[in-house]
Length: 343
Image (tube, rainbow, N blue to C red):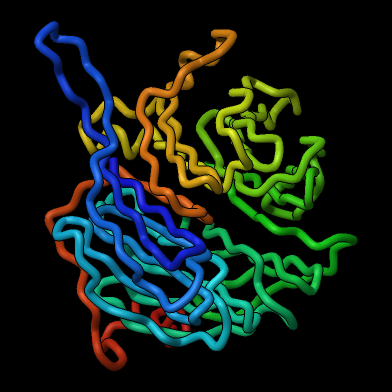
């Protein structure tokens, strides 16, 4: 499992989660450093990982690309005119290498890239103000965004254009599809709302009592959140109740969460499907076993201290023999976007 974190201090941090065996044959987990250096000119605001490739977006309006197999930076994408606020890969279930990268920015646009090699395909204006977050449907055909204009927008990734937009009563900071793509979640300060993906109908409203700063979907209808309360809370989005909670997971607010999906675990060959990674603004990254949440005070299995103010966290266990490449110019094959426009 690879983890990548960004920080206020412009540093990008890479770690490898490994299983160690002692002489007594007991297994322990450790976070081994892969790299650490100032990759941006200002604060890193978003990171994403898929297979051997990672990307980071910063307040310097740029996206950096990394090859995790060689722990090196291999290129830069400069297609936005504002801070990069959100990054997301689309990786089909049958592949271990991402097919597309999507990025959102304070300039109100969403950029679509071919990930093999990394080439800019299209820029779509989705909000009048900055984009706070984006999420890609599991099919790779749609994306949702929320912005500072208090709007929710849908982007047709096949045609490369915005297909829907609606005004909300309050600005949302986070939007996420669930694993099935049948529901999506939005975060508005301390409240989390659950919606039907087909018509955006409100299903549930969850009250976290303190501001939510990060959220990520798990399996079986579970949504994990972290934030100002310093807890890692797992919500059962079917019943609206808390499934489990790791109280005071960090000494300060939680800024990033990573849940390893079952498909990732099967592809990697590692039994990491029960693990959750968390990052806090004091620079600490911790690994938790959700099977231990029934204990009164569950302990983390591994920890890394970066001594930086961490802002975001991403991870993946997908393995691939292919190395990421950065293209130049427009590709001859623009994948699904041109395929439907020409049909």
